[in-house]
Image (cartoon, rainbow, N blue to C red; front, side, top):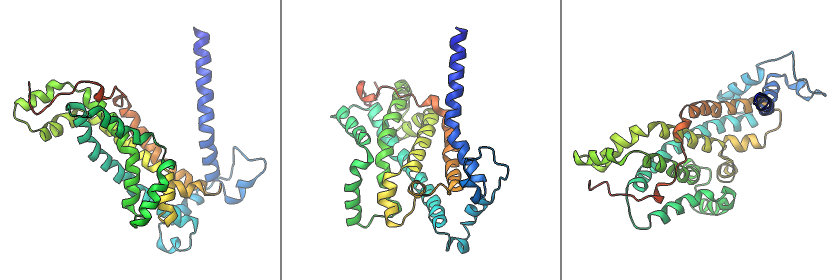
Amino acid sequence: MSQIRRATGIAAILIAVWSFLPIYWLLVLALQPSGSRVDVPPNLYPANLTLENFRFVLSLFDPKVLATAGFGSQFSSGLVHSTVVATAVMVLTLALSIPGSYAFARFSFRFRTTLFFLIFFTRVLPPISIVIPFYQFYKSVNLLGTYQGIIAAQLTLTVPLAMWVISGIFASIPQELDKQARIDGCSRYRVLRSIMIPVAAPGLIAMAVVSWLTSWNELVFSLFLASIADFFMVPPVLAFASFSASAPLVIAFIPPVIAAFILQRYMTQLRLMSPPVMTTGYDASSPR
């Protein structure tokens, strides 16, 4: 048993080192002067570290510098656009998913199972397979390179997954709670607002973080529906950047890390339970 534990510990350390090595190398490149990045062989422990690269990136938010920044202007614009889009996607995902998930978890209606799996099936399709129809439609209605267009496209990625997860969370809440609330005269909206959402709050927070991360890291829609029309987003800008853009890469890496720490706290609430459509629902409007 001790040998198994030792082997498991060694394997865990090796995996951690292997996973952290690219991040370490990215930090080293970001902290080196521009001329030192092409040294052969590369120096894993550079002595002449500097924050000049980060100062330059932060200076891009000065309009005078931004006008002549080239790649830097794309990155600074991408940070703003990606932050706005990811936040809007997160809020709209919850706003659309919570009522729908409550309906699937608590009510019986015709074609309930079929409708649920049709919604989830849209998430199974890879974005690259549907981006061309999106592009043609957006071009015809002038939505290319707009907040509305990219947010609507990314919602097709986040809403199905959120409905599946939140439906499972709602289905795990005892039905007696909302039955009793209905007996006490609560409306369906009041039951959802005052009982279901507070009880499921940790799971909803976790799903909100997942939705934000999905939007922040999304590349295909951001490239074909936004950046192609000079509406820059962080993933496409960084995808075509040179290795010298290490400081922007580090800065773009910070928000997902913060989100991951937040998500870790609530991860136990994201139990991928059996979808509620596989169980027998009931009509919460008539307590029995």
